[in-house]
Length: 278
Length: 305
Image (cartoon, rainbow over all chains, first blue to last red; front, side, top):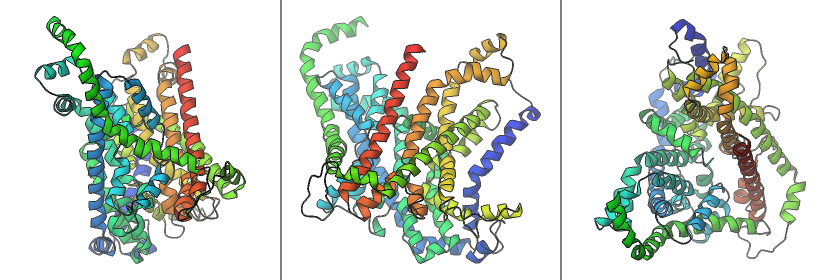
């Protein structure tokens, strides 16, 4: 089955996969080349990829100045990092207690986690929005971050990872006089690195790309995340300029793609594991 | 480890209490957050779906199932529900069929594996709103490259996103493009888990052609993966929102209205909280039903498999 084939034998496989790859990459290719052209050229002939007039500087300048695009990107980085830090701070100790400690109510608590796994995040959105409005927190970082600070999927994933760790590891630390809290962060966590990176990539991708919640909670461009920023940009005058619009799309898509190309394995494992959650 | 056991046995009795209180201390923050941010609001949502509350209204009345009764007669909701189900019924099988094909092709050779895996996976990590904008350009009725290509072979231009006949077709195509890589990666994981000697055994038993090996080994062993992929992809499809919000806003004439987008519109544009909550409950019930079916089928596989 898996014997090495000659290049000729492998040609049909490569041809089919390449054909599919061209379709997969088509929007990226046209997006990128349109971002280098002046609008008039895009209108005249969109099949030719290479620009006659090189207009990249104008397009990208317009993308960065028509709306605070750099601010959107910064907001995205800030929101994603804060969410990840909170998620780990909440989920890891709980996952450890669920995986390794014996206490009454453990099964019951795990049942609640499983219940939480069944609920898509769109379900609590409406009451959370009302709550945020009551507290005067609309259009704030708090509202962008706090609803996601608890990740039941994170608890679930870390619990699975911690269960695989040998009990002797914690016994030894206890004999050394460590408390449970420092065991969590100094013994257990460093030994569950694969789970942590998988979870981190999953979380970052999910929240960088999320549109639903920012669309609900953000009103002013100052607070927009990259996903929402694209919509703000389109609503502006510059949104009718295809070249500039594509430049903006390139700028907001690039960071995650760059990160993906740098850490492919982690990304793919992270998303595949996250399939569990759906 | 007799020493460790000897140490831990007497420790146990005194440690149990300490262990329990440590555990509660460690779970408490997550537990409180879970109630405040997920379980509590979800329960509140369920309650709100039985009310006529509108944001800004000073009072609310409990109206029983009236919101649900209104949904049953609301043509927009019918469009949203049927469009969402059409989207699931088209995008899910298409992504899974194509995804399985791509995964098998990638796995069946050694050349360029990582490259193709990365290419097909790229849309999964890309900002969907931005890519939807790129698709909008590709599918633009007059300047879009897709129509220009079609014109070269003599096909009249199609108003992909602007006509009610084509808008769901276009959204479904983008949906397949978006979900394909996800399916490929899950199937690749399933395929690598199949032991290679099973193929060798099948071959000695006379399964000569690739198709025979697929039928006898790959497909049965991929069963649990497939079931899992079906549920996950179906739920991902049910949650279609970004492309609709970015490209069509449910239009033209509700031809591309979907559940989550209608919920968003009713709740956050018209502030009809009770009505919007009822739509969310319908959405949740469909998601839960899918998960229930998956669990049932998995159980059956364990019993008869």
